[in-house]
Image (cartoon, rainbow, N blue to C red; front, side):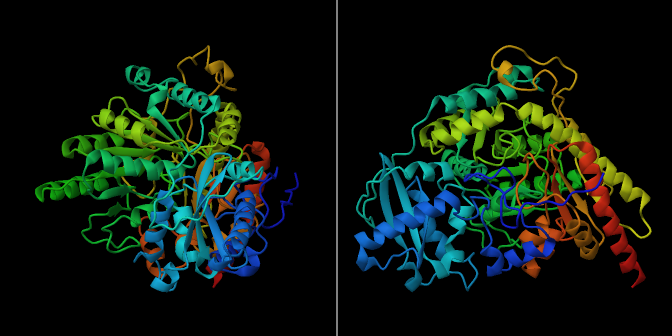
Length: 602
């Protein structure tokens, strides 16, 4: 078989393209680095991008339309689409978040807003068919200083909501932030919202680790959000509100970069980029491959806080982590949390709840439904699931029930419901393809050591070569049974693949190379789509760490210190035929080996 090159143009989404696509194809390692470093030539070619990174498509078009209208309605404001950008939200707290974000000491000096800059930020409220939007309008040259309020909390409007507003508008007068702000309308729920909650509950009750606990789950324990990051952000607000106090947020291991940045923004985090001192805001234990060691460190930290009359606010951990695929000892974590009285939040996005049941050890499970649950990279959503066995259940349930307001549009909910009907069938293929690929690459790494081409392969089924503790065993402790009979009847009859699904290790793996030269040779000859996102129908690769942490030396060194090295390639394995994937990756390995030989000869 001849390996076929990818024909998707640079800057376009994975096929099939829609106005709601979440992906972008940027072939070549250096293309991403140029984009990271602000190369305008790359930026001009973008026709698609993950919508939470920056308003594009329908959201950008809506912003231009709003700015055009406002430039005529309020000519004295100086607003125009050529000089300003527009970030639309459904909640008024976006105003205070934006105002705080742009002047925060966490902004780089060149991006932080001065008093003069702040005076140029405009807040307006508009209404479309009874739905109010809250607009943060900013000068385009200062975009980098304010865009994080769109990216990290994940509460901006979706492309489908923006598309719906194109049917017409009725503008309310502009509203400065210091005056009374009109109350939010939020969005109506549809039947699809309740059916999504029912599906999530049913999946969590499908062959659970704890039958009695799973049987107590109801749809009232599921809260839906516009994105996975919105779920993390709103959950954090609820945790702080419910606790009536603020202790440090502790993150274990690699966490998604937007989550990491969200935690960095916490008040009291006096130093950033992983070099925290004793702070009230955020504490990060990066190295988690030796789970026993990090649990000892966490216990000592919690003990030290207790001696000072303080507590951990909550612990956040991805299981397994993105992109390092580390699985920590959740049982030990649960015991420490019980001993020192703090909640445990587990993000199961990478493993996904069809494969894993972490509810017996988590107080809260948060998931990005954008990934494998949706599966087609064309709709965003997130969920929060409360464990009925948690000592914090009553307090959190009451708080979230009071504070949660629907921001997931009915068209998004309907599309997600449709996509997720094939979740089990797709996940079976993801599991099989990814495990086969991980095994192939791992075998290659053991037989090609002179010169070394692959340093190691990171995947939950492959035991660590650098630690005495095994994340594989910890992962397997929380896998759903693959031998128990599948449940039948509604709602399982609506789930494609329910009768044949076998839990596995997920779609994500990472490959460490001995040098960036070898990594680039592999990556630049790997004929799959290249871009951000995971859990899609097609395979996608990304130089994740070099892209996200490689721009600043201090940041790069910190994250590399716990394994997020720049010589790593992240792979989200898709639904292609296995033989096709095998040949594509074996072809790229030939180029990596050639480069390794050249490098060894130098």
